[in-house]
Length: 493
Image (cartoon, rainbow, N blue to C red; front, side, top):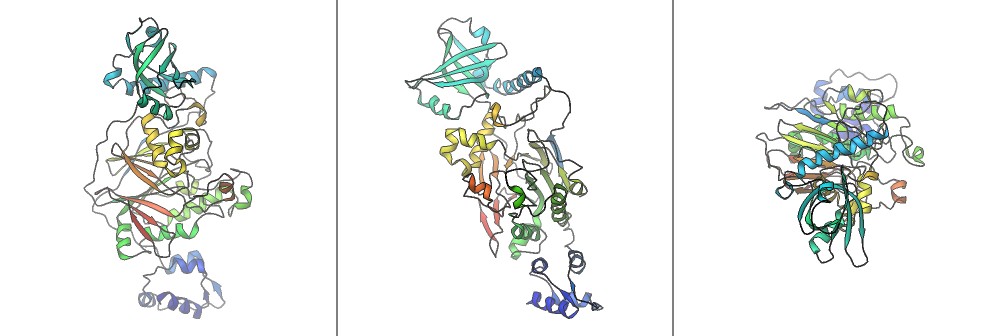
């Protein structure tokens, strides 16, 4: 009723209200208070369509909510690009660097503390126990069901045999991929190793932390601002909800607790990303797309701190790690005071205690299509299983061809050095998936983009959009807010 009153009031003053502006007027709008504070509202001499700027003057955004605690975002690890000429030897140095990092984790396992190099193993007698650490160079299955792997380290290559009667190891073969670093425990044969155990770098059990403060973090991904398929209505509902302008009293109370927002890539739709994309763009240039996003994020309450990374649709190179967004293209985002922009992947610490590993997820396509255990688990409908897979490998993209990369001989930034409290990804555009692995909370976000013709052509029919995961850092309870409904739905995970 209040909305009708204000529309009539403005109409009498010669101001026309568009449907888009009408949506921005909060449901809780107090008409009487508006009249009291706008007693001298002047009638326009001509009919004027109410603009966004006028709207902000009439309905200023809510003031920052006072918090009895301080909020903080600290960058733990964000890739810094070091332009230099790359040579063939850099690729060798890069793989040696990766090997050294992952070997360090494996040597912490009791079974591998006596691990030796491959050239020394080849000098051992038959039936002598050996432990090795190396890359998976080759993987083959024989006619009778045995597996033969070729394992490589800096000193050489050796064959290892997994017998067809060892059902436990045969299951491991389903998720074993080329170029990952593993530990092997077994006995020497004639120039090969009979395997008794295969050990992944894996993560240890993580301490399950809880904050003293009643504060929440919201996770979203894949906005694709600039696309005609951008879920504008749902995203604006999300923004209004965070600004305490939308939802029930209980939902607004939850929104008031949100002090952190994490966005994991594909912030804009980009230009020239896939065939025929230009027909599906509402904003045809990169600058305009980032400006539109900055306008949305800039309208959020000032007490919400935002952290974001890019993805394969952003104005960045495709090779991973992707550096932070360019200050040239995304100047309007960098101008926001409450935003932290990091590389993809990256790790940040929020509230002085929770580490969040953020990765967009571009290489996930390769593994979901090529790893049988992931396909059987649901592939694109099981992004949480993909994240668990990655944590076991301690590497974002272990297989050489799964992701483009630029070799860095000082550090492999795709190695998961530090165990996070939360691991959040996007890219998949399927429904939100939340689970836990060794006390690490796994969050696979959906998108804010409707299904595109290109996605349908690729067979991605189960597209989901318009949802956000909200985690209370005090209780670790997770709620999924669904902005696709007229009345926002709330699902407890």
